[in-house]
Length: 310
Image (cartoon, rainbow, N blue to C red; front, side, top):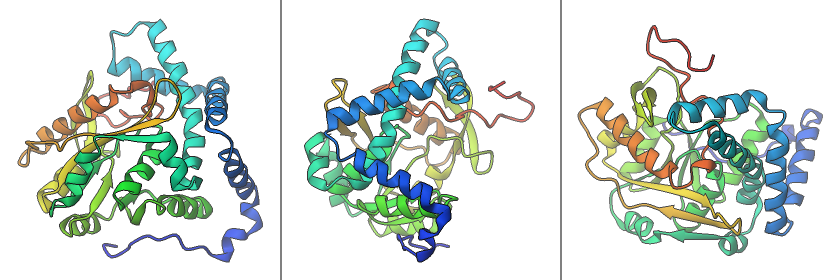
């Protein structure tokens, strides 16, 4: 698998009748993101508020995550946060379409970069660069912005639906040289050793395999991937966090590229996981309502501990 550079290959099978409804949805999204951005913004936030009434399970998961991470928040604060988070979730659908369908000039019109010198310095270094992406609801747009200034290698999970897999690969290749399956560790190491920029997101719970437990906000034991440790030990890349932030005035986006992380703990995987979680926390707190709280970040528990999502 280490040589599997993933490209977007269109096949006639994708025109099969079983995909026609999905093609209709794709076409509708394409047309909607042709609208002026202020209108897209209002539509997206409205869609999020509407969805909040029906996505009861996701609302419960989001609420529980916020309660676990910030136990001192009042119920009123949580409700305000949830509303903003679901507005951001509705907007994320449109922002994905913007990332995949917008021309570069329109991305540049609405998206500014803060800390671009940090990205440029990393690219000019002979070492590879591990760009630490975090699962903000704006992550597709953030990856596109990064790719405009410094095309790199995308890491992704293949989609079970063949048409969606083709579409997301095609869309992401607008700002990446090629894609790698997230299980292709050898391919990632090779790319970093060749001096490439590699997009990597270590902030989800990927299950007990290749994970350790480390603190994340107020949760003492959060399953955290050791993938970052594996890549750093094998390829010695630079670690550059970034956050794609939707501006508070709803008038565009600011991609914040942070300076290189220093003093990564090489010899202790638990300490390394705690180090990364702390760095991720700092990025999340820049725009916490825009983080993807609706996934079960704490689904994996140490042996004998009950689920946190009862």
